[in-house]
Amino acid sequence: MLSIFKSEIMKLKSTKMSWLVLMGAMPANLISLFALLPRITPDGARAAFDLQDMFYRQGMVLTILGPFMFALMTGYIISREYQERTINQLFSYPVSRVRILAAKLSVVVLLIVLTTAFSCIAVTVIGVIKSFTQDIGFDRVWTGIRMNIMLCVLSFGTIPVAAALSMISKSVIPTTVLGVFITIVNIISEMGHGMRGILFPWLTPYWPVRDLAQGLAEMGPNPYVIPALIILVITFLVSLTFCIIYYSKAEVHSGS
Image (cartoon, rainbow, N blue to C red; front, side):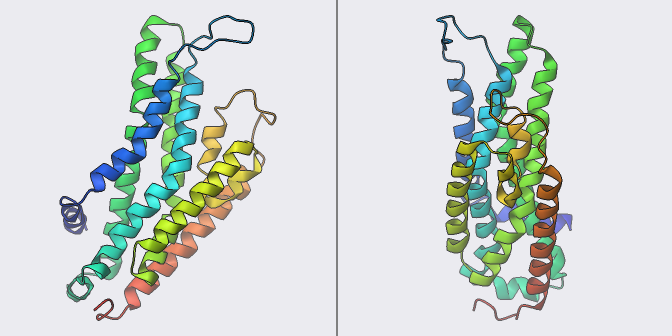
Protein backbone atom coordinates (compact mmCIF):
# COMPACT_ATOMS: atom_id res chain seq x y z
CA MET A 1 0.00 0.00 0.00
CA LEU A 2 2.80 2.41 0.90
CA SER A 3 4.60 1.76 -2.39
CA ILE A 4 1.42 2.50 -4.35
CA PHE A 5 0.92 5.69 -2.36
CA LYS A 6 4.49 6.77 -3.12
CA SER A 7 3.99 6.09 -6.82
CA GLU A 8 0.87 8.27 -6.82
CA ILE A 9 2.84 11.04 -5.15
CA MET A 10 5.57 10.68 -7.78
CA LYS A 11 2.99 11.18 -10.53
CA LEU A 12 2.25 14.64 -9.15
CA LYS A 13 5.85 15.85 -9.25
CA SER A 14 5.63 17.03 -12.86
CA THR A 15 2.23 18.66 -12.34
CA LYS A 16 1.11 21.99 -10.94
CA MET A 17 -0.70 20.36 -8.00
CA SER A 18 1.56 22.15 -5.51
CA TRP A 19 0.44 25.46 -7.00
CA LEU A 20 -3.18 24.38 -6.63
CA VAL A 21 -2.57 23.75 -2.92
CA LEU A 22 -1.02 27.19 -2.54
CA MET A 23 -3.88 28.80 -4.47
CA GLY A 24 -6.31 27.20 -2.06
CA ALA A 25 -4.37 28.40 0.99
CA MET A 26 -3.36 31.90 -0.11
CA PRO A 27 -6.78 33.67 0.10
CA ALA A 28 -7.33 32.52 3.70
CA ASN A 29 -3.91 33.84 4.70
CA LEU A 30 -4.59 37.18 3.01
CA ILE A 31 -7.90 37.53 4.83
CA SER A 32 -6.07 36.83 8.08
CA LEU A 33 -3.50 39.54 7.35
CA PHE A 34 -6.22 42.05 6.42
CA ALA A 35 -7.68 41.54 9.89
CA LEU A 36 -4.53 43.21 11.28
CA LEU A 37 -5.42 46.52 9.66
CA PRO A 38 -6.53 49.20 12.13
CA ARG A 39 -10.25 49.06 12.85
CA ILE A 40 -12.43 51.63 14.53
CA THR A 41 -15.39 50.80 16.75
CA PRO A 42 -18.72 52.69 16.40
CA ASP A 43 -17.76 54.95 19.33
CA GLY A 44 -14.53 56.02 17.58
CA ALA A 45 -12.07 53.92 19.59
CA ARG A 46 -9.55 51.59 18.04
CA ALA A 47 -10.73 47.97 18.06
CA ALA A 48 -8.63 45.47 19.98
CA PHE A 49 -6.86 42.54 18.32
CA ASP A 50 -9.34 39.67 17.92
CA LEU A 51 -7.69 36.30 17.22
CA GLN A 52 -10.98 34.44 17.26
CA ASP A 53 -12.36 36.67 14.52
CA MET A 54 -9.22 36.07 12.44
CA PHE A 55 -9.63 32.31 12.71
CA TYR A 56 -13.31 32.66 11.83
CA ARG A 57 -12.55 34.64 8.68
CA GLN A 58 -9.80 32.18 7.69
CA GLY A 59 -12.10 29.20 8.17
CA MET A 60 -14.95 30.85 6.31
CA VAL A 61 -12.78 31.50 3.26
CA LEU A 62 -11.52 27.91 3.31
CA THR A 63 -15.03 26.45 3.51
CA ILE A 64 -16.02 28.57 0.51
CA LEU A 65 -13.03 27.79 -1.72
CA GLY A 66 -12.22 24.34 -0.33
CA PRO A 67 -14.99 22.36 -2.07
CA PHE A 68 -13.90 23.68 -5.46
CA MET A 69 -10.19 23.10 -4.85
CA PHE A 70 -10.67 19.64 -3.31
CA ALA A 71 -13.05 18.52 -6.06
CA LEU A 72 -10.55 19.69 -8.69
CA MET A 73 -7.71 17.82 -6.97
CA THR A 74 -9.79 14.64 -6.73
CA GLY A 75 -10.99 14.88 -10.30
CA TYR A 76 -7.47 15.30 -11.62
CA ILE A 77 -5.98 12.42 -9.62
CA ILE A 78 -8.77 10.00 -10.54
CA SER A 79 -9.33 10.97 -14.18
CA ARG A 80 -5.69 11.45 -15.17
CA GLU A 81 -5.23 7.73 -15.91
CA TYR A 82 -8.18 7.85 -18.31
CA GLN A 83 -7.12 11.05 -20.04
CA GLU A 84 -3.54 9.89 -20.53
CA ARG A 85 -4.63 6.43 -21.71
CA THR A 86 -2.70 4.66 -18.95
CA ILE A 87 -5.73 3.11 -17.26
CA ASN A 88 -5.23 -0.15 -19.18
CA GLN A 89 -1.73 -0.56 -17.78
CA LEU A 90 -2.87 0.39 -14.29
CA PHE A 91 -5.65 -2.21 -14.27
CA SER A 92 -3.26 -4.85 -15.60
CA TYR A 93 -0.93 -4.63 -12.59
CA PRO A 94 -1.07 -7.57 -10.15
CA VAL A 95 -2.35 -5.24 -7.47
CA SER A 96 -5.82 -4.99 -6.00
CA ARG A 97 -7.78 -2.16 -7.57
CA VAL A 98 -9.18 -1.31 -4.16
CA ARG A 99 -5.65 -0.68 -2.93
CA ILE A 100 -4.97 1.52 -5.96
CA LEU A 101 -8.13 3.50 -5.28
CA ALA A 102 -7.25 3.76 -1.58
CA ALA A 103 -3.81 5.12 -2.50
CA LYS A 104 -5.33 7.75 -4.78
CA LEU A 105 -7.82 8.84 -2.13
CA SER A 106 -5.00 8.91 0.42
CA VAL A 107 -3.18 11.38 -1.80
CA VAL A 108 -6.31 13.53 -1.83
CA VAL A 109 -6.39 13.38 1.97
CA LEU A 110 -2.76 14.53 2.07
CA LEU A 111 -3.52 17.45 -0.26
CA ILE A 112 -6.52 18.48 1.86
CA VAL A 113 -4.37 18.36 5.00
CA LEU A 114 -1.64 20.45 3.36
CA THR A 115 -4.12 23.02 2.04
CA THR A 116 -5.78 23.35 5.43
CA ALA A 117 -2.46 23.58 7.26
CA PHE A 118 -1.05 26.20 4.90
CA SER A 119 -4.27 28.23 5.02
CA CYS A 120 -3.99 28.82 8.76
CA ILE A 121 -0.25 29.47 8.94
CA ALA A 122 -0.56 33.27 9.00
CA VAL A 123 -3.23 33.50 11.69
CA THR A 124 -1.56 30.81 13.82
CA VAL A 125 1.85 32.48 13.70
CA ILE A 126 0.32 35.88 14.43
CA GLY A 127 -1.64 34.40 17.32
CA VAL A 128 1.45 32.79 18.85
CA ILE A 129 3.45 36.03 18.53
CA LYS A 130 0.63 38.12 19.98
CA SER A 131 0.24 35.69 22.91
CA PHE A 132 3.70 36.76 24.10
CA THR A 133 2.93 40.48 23.97
CA GLN A 134 -0.80 40.55 24.79
CA ASP A 135 -3.05 38.68 27.16
CA ILE A 136 -5.08 36.90 24.48
CA GLY A 137 -4.68 33.41 25.93
CA PHE A 138 -2.95 30.57 24.10
CA ASP A 139 -6.18 28.59 24.40
CA ARG A 140 -7.60 30.73 21.60
CA VAL A 141 -4.75 29.63 19.34
CA TRP A 142 -5.56 26.02 20.13
CA THR A 143 -9.28 26.68 19.49
CA GLY A 144 -8.44 27.93 16.01
CA ILE A 145 -6.13 25.00 15.29
CA ARG A 146 -8.78 22.56 16.51
CA MET A 147 -11.32 24.23 14.22
CA ASN A 148 -9.02 23.68 11.26
CA ILE A 149 -8.50 20.03 12.19
CA MET A 150 -12.25 19.44 12.33
CA LEU A 151 -12.74 21.33 9.07
CA CYS A 152 -10.08 19.16 7.42
CA VAL A 153 -11.66 15.89 8.59
CA LEU A 154 -15.19 16.92 7.60
CA SER A 155 -14.04 18.10 4.17
CA PHE A 156 -13.05 14.57 3.20
CA GLY A 157 -16.63 13.36 3.67
CA THR A 158 -17.69 14.45 0.20
CA ILE A 159 -14.50 13.58 -1.68
CA PRO A 160 -15.79 10.14 -2.85
CA VAL A 161 -18.62 11.97 -4.63
CA ALA A 162 -16.09 13.86 -6.76
CA ALA A 163 -14.14 10.63 -7.27
CA ALA A 164 -17.25 8.79 -8.47
CA LEU A 165 -18.09 11.59 -10.88
CA SER A 166 -14.54 11.48 -12.27
CA MET A 167 -14.72 7.72 -12.80
CA ILE A 168 -18.00 7.92 -14.67
CA SER A 169 -17.07 10.89 -16.85
CA LYS A 170 -13.36 9.98 -17.14
CA SER A 171 -12.71 13.72 -17.13
CA VAL A 172 -11.93 16.49 -14.68
CA ILE A 173 -14.51 18.87 -16.20
CA PRO A 174 -17.63 17.55 -14.38
CA THR A 175 -15.88 17.73 -11.01
CA THR A 176 -14.80 21.28 -11.79
CA VAL A 177 -18.40 22.23 -12.59
CA LEU A 178 -19.51 20.52 -9.37
CA GLY A 179 -16.91 22.44 -7.38
CA VAL A 180 -18.00 25.79 -8.86
CA PHE A 181 -21.67 25.04 -8.16
CA ILE A 182 -20.96 24.04 -4.56
CA THR A 183 -18.81 27.13 -3.99
CA ILE A 184 -21.70 29.35 -5.13
CA VAL A 185 -24.11 27.51 -2.84
CA ASN A 186 -21.69 27.83 0.08
CA ILE A 187 -21.22 31.56 -0.48
CA ILE A 188 -24.97 32.14 -0.43
CA SER A 189 -25.43 29.93 2.64
CA GLU A 190 -22.58 31.47 4.63
CA MET A 191 -23.81 34.99 3.87
CA GLY A 192 -26.99 34.06 5.74
CA HIS A 193 -25.00 32.67 8.71
CA GLY A 194 -27.86 30.28 9.46
CA MET A 195 -27.46 27.13 11.52
CA ARG A 196 -29.39 24.89 9.15
CA GLY A 197 -26.91 25.31 6.29
CA ILE A 198 -24.59 22.61 7.67
CA LEU A 199 -27.16 20.00 6.61
CA PHE A 200 -25.74 20.42 3.10
CA PRO A 201 -22.85 17.89 3.12
CA TRP A 202 -20.36 20.24 1.46
CA LEU A 203 -21.18 22.89 4.05
CA THR A 204 -20.91 20.65 7.12
CA PRO A 205 -17.26 21.78 7.60
CA TYR A 206 -18.71 25.23 8.30
CA TRP A 207 -20.05 23.92 11.62
CA PRO A 208 -16.80 24.31 13.66
CA VAL A 209 -16.06 27.57 11.81
CA ARG A 210 -19.43 29.10 12.67
CA ASP A 211 -18.90 28.30 16.33
CA LEU A 212 -16.13 30.94 16.33
CA ALA A 213 -18.44 33.65 14.94
CA GLN A 214 -19.44 36.52 17.20
CA GLY A 215 -22.53 38.70 17.23
CA LEU A 216 -24.68 36.58 14.93
CA ALA A 217 -28.46 36.52 15.28
CA GLU A 218 -28.39 32.81 16.09
CA MET A 219 -25.81 31.83 18.68
CA GLY A 220 -25.26 28.84 20.92
CA PRO A 221 -25.03 25.09 20.20
CA ASN A 222 -26.13 24.16 16.70
CA PRO A 223 -29.15 21.79 16.93
CA TYR A 224 -28.48 20.46 13.42
CA VAL A 225 -25.03 19.02 14.14
CA ILE A 226 -26.10 15.39 14.63
CA PRO A 227 -28.39 15.28 11.53
CA ALA A 228 -25.66 17.01 9.50
CA LEU A 229 -23.03 14.48 10.56
CA ILE A 230 -25.40 11.59 9.77
CA ILE A 231 -26.05 12.99 6.29
CA LEU A 232 -22.32 13.48 5.73
CA VAL A 233 -21.48 9.93 6.86
CA ILE A 234 -24.20 8.47 4.64
CA THR A 235 -22.94 10.54 1.70
CA PHE A 236 -19.41 9.32 2.34
CA LEU A 237 -20.29 5.65 2.71
CA VAL A 238 -22.66 5.48 -0.26
CA SER A 239 -20.33 7.31 -2.64
CA LEU A 240 -17.27 5.38 -1.42
CA THR A 241 -19.08 2.07 -1.86
CA PHE A 242 -20.01 3.09 -5.39
CA CYS A 243 -16.39 4.04 -6.13
CA ILE A 244 -15.08 0.69 -4.87
CA ILE A 245 -17.62 -1.34 -6.86
CA TYR A 246 -17.24 0.72 -10.02
CA TYR A 247 -13.44 0.72 -9.89
CA SER A 248 -13.29 -3.00 -9.16
CA LYS A 249 -15.69 -3.97 -11.94
CA ALA A 250 -14.45 -1.57 -14.63
CA GLU A 251 -13.28 -3.16 -17.86
CA VAL A 252 -9.55 -3.32 -18.49
CA HIS A 253 -10.05 -1.46 -21.79
CA SER A 254 -11.81 1.48 -20.17
CA GLY A 255 -10.53 4.75 -21.56
CA SER A 256 -8.70 3.23 -24.52
